[in-house]
Length: 342
Length: 279
Ligand SMILES: Cc1cc2nc3c(=O)[nH]c(=O)nc-3n(C[C@H](O)[C@H](O)[C@H](O)COP(=O)(O)OP(=O)(O)OC[C@H]3O[C@@H](n4cnc5c(N)ncnc54)[C@H](O)[C@@H]3O)c2cc1C
Ligand code: SF4
Ligand code: SF4
Ligand code: FES
Image 1 (tube, each protein chain N blue to C red):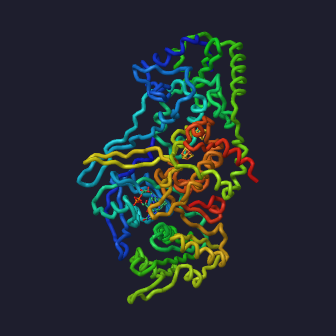
Image 2: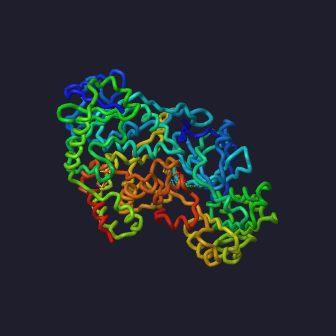
Image 3: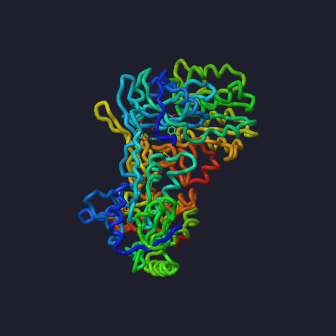
């Protein structure tokens, strides 16, 4: 695995250079938000000067809305016209380590042994993830170190860039990452740089102020599906779905059909376990009739079911749901409270 | 890469209205491309997504048996958007199916055992598939005694009437058909399924019960089987949850950490006990 040092002022030009040959997705300031989006020719990517994007970059591989196939009406019924699976050679530039980790978690689900999701995999395979480590921890709500990640963690990344103060350390973690080597002109990194990185890591991890007992609650969740605790968290929840739509690991979707005159398309759209209709059956029966069951599902899915199925926690500690919930429901507190249940 | 979301084109070759209320029909579908039939290798207990472009998809249990090749059958109750559109279809229409999905009835486990099949209402569909499969001449000797207990609210609501008549003439299958309430022409049994199960009292010795029906029927039937000595390991049922993808991705149909679409829909009661009671 190759490591290189590059000059600090060189970084800003790199995504634009990559853009000559790839579709680039990067953090861009749009009005008063920083969003992760496709970089347009006139746009300046933010490199280094941002905390994290409001939306999770998972949308590059698993878009909010995506056409799966198109069809057309014929005298014998409506028939398939074509399958939509556009995937460009893409570079995601400036992903944060927590969000890069979410790709590795989503791979576990969408790229299983049996039943592969071709829409996700096609885009994921053609993309290279260039991550900008959090040498300075962006928010007080960050808790990546509690969920097996870290501010300098490279899981899910192909290239990892770390600000060492004087220079950037660029680590090419995968063969895919190495292919971008020519865009990063610099000098081979010495052991000195390695030591420096370790210092930056210690310092960054020390800056994290939120800690949750994420693994520890698994055995408690295993035996407390019916605990009265579940009556205490959902009451102010508006079922707005913000927490799930911003979450880098939430993957639930709906499939729907749209037809105009003789042409139609089948789409998939993000959906949310926070919505009452999510599990409601045609008969009217709903196995999760109130917000209580839905919040229990959300908690269980992240901290128990995903662990049961994949031995991984389906939360990367980005803190988005904590920051943007309109009624301040805080997953950190929920996990903390669960750890104290009898 | 295979795309599990793309349905195989099928032609509706036969439609049978099963009940006098006309809201339950059986659709016989034939693959437009022969090689798709090869790929759609299924077992009793599995289901498929019936796909109507422009309307949507519905998960429906497979009502036919692989021992009858050349077509697949589904028995569908008219309920919402997709199932209503299905009911309006005519023979000759081309539609789609996606699958086969899910696990199956525990066919290997049933081998060498006596099998008690209990069905209520139109939930009899995959049990019909199972029964057809077991009584097929290639398979019959693999199973011990086969008892089928099937009930509906009225005689007009019994599905697969011709087939029931044919089964009643066989001597390698014990059939009990019952209705909650008969009419002037009804000469058969009257009584609820749980009561009939009690009367028939199948022996639990080396036996497995496979039960499907409305929740209320299941609730009253299970105690009868416990009383007869059936253990939770030897009672199987099939779950329903709202579904979309059918392949464990869309996150909609989980009961605890299991996805009904992928890990089910068939579970033994012992397995269900280990899951959360959220279905
Ligand atoms: C494994 C399995 C086997 C089934 N077998 C049969 C069968 O043999 N015959 C039969 O008539 N019905 C069966 N059902 C129920 C059937 O799937 C629903 O009645 C049907 O999906 C309703 O769709 P709709 O479009 O008509 O209704 P709408 O209310 O318009 O449906 C909206 C969508 O919600 C989903 N949905 C709604 N209710 C259910 C439900 N109970 N289960 C699953 N998805 C649902 C579907 O994706 C559907 O397209 C089965 C369900 C499951 C899960
Ligand atoms: S649950 Fe909240 S903190 Fe965890 S990954 Fe999702 S949005 Fe981030
Ligand atoms: S963001 Fe808050 S209010 Fe909205 S669904 Fe999530 S927990 Fe409920
Ligand atoms: S139907 Fe999508 S996960 Fe089961």
